[in-house]
Length: 401
Image (tube, rainbow, N blue to C red; front, side):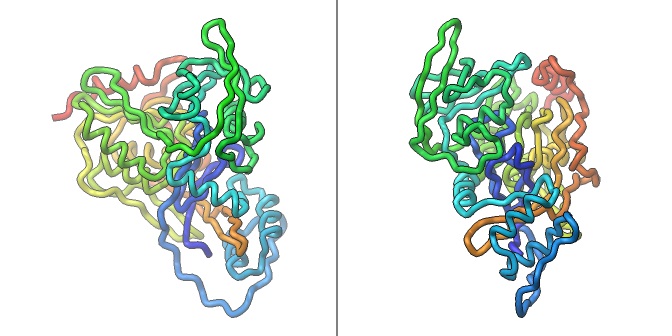
């Protein structure tokens, strides 16, 4: 068996999560970047000594992840059979990737992606707007600005369409959020943008870019807001640098809205910035319980509010749940997605990979996240400004000594 464990989101939301202890990807956030996370090594039991392959016969239509993984490692199941078994398993989190797809995802796990360098969000009326433009990206060079309305991608109107579909088109997946073809650097994408009353058409060419997953702002004196879009490699370091450089004597807003996951190691390291050691989460692999702990020495005094919403998934839920259970932060916003199952990837001889569900993770108090999500301490109803509400909470928490 592979020795790596993953926490990932459904294929309809995610494109490209190959991880070892990973939770999710970023398409659900509306980020057209496609930055994903890689995971940390688990602590699996040693593989048993095997003398010859054993036949694999799935019981009814239920996928036995442990047996299938062993059969793959034994060479008893080939790529075509593995893909077929995964597709009919009934496991919404299971997935199968070709070697080429998996290789492309590895790039994204290291914080790089192929795209045009813009993020989009859909308003309640269905209008899709650019929410952020990456520096030195094709979109920036073409003059695309935050606030521009995205009218069409490659001739297809996007107003009212799911953000996942819009992002898939921007990334070159043909408008299919489930499509697995890796985007090609240099491939063109034609956008129709509206600024004021004027429409213009621009053709951009996708490029390999470095993901910008951490955004820092200062909504008020002494308040530092750190928005984390996902957890690829290096995210925790960026969060720590923001804390070291920014004035946050009145408190920190850790914005995890729309964050659909990434490297569990990065999420745990972010938790370590606000905790002085202790449990972050427990998870199961084939019935064996393992634990994740924060490092010692984090800031335990600065007032902290964590912002979440229905797009907060997987590793982001693990982080929010840990800070909430440990009494370190007030969680504000709306209930999170509820993705807490654990996937383990098994690699076939041709380099293809089957992701199989093997267990679930729990918060420090023992809460199960899968299917339940994280319930905020302060629920912010639709239409209200969750950020403003969080600032009010910070003012009530008082200033750190």
